[in-house]
Image 1 (tube, one colour):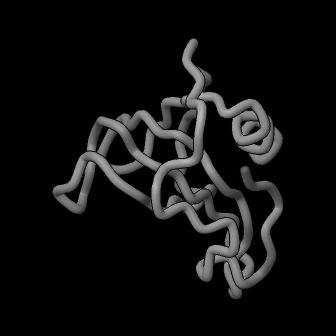
Image 2: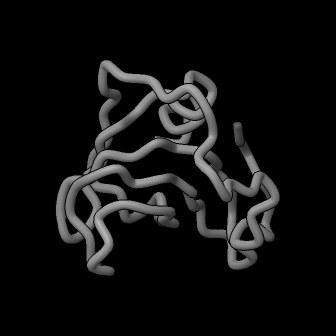
Length: 98
């Protein structure tokens, strides 16, 4: 999963993930670790399920909670507004970012 996510970030590939409560379409921007050692993905969600009530916007996903992921035949061209490559949620280190 980590290699897939790194590649998606490097290629600026739009991906679909299954993450509670359902399927989501996201633009992955950064992959890293929390201070507690959990792998996390910072992404901009463009559509799909949500537990926050906001189907579009910045989300932080724990990689161990992503049930499935696949690349879509779409790319995004630029980082989304407010993207921060020095994400404070990744205090354990950034592995890949735009």
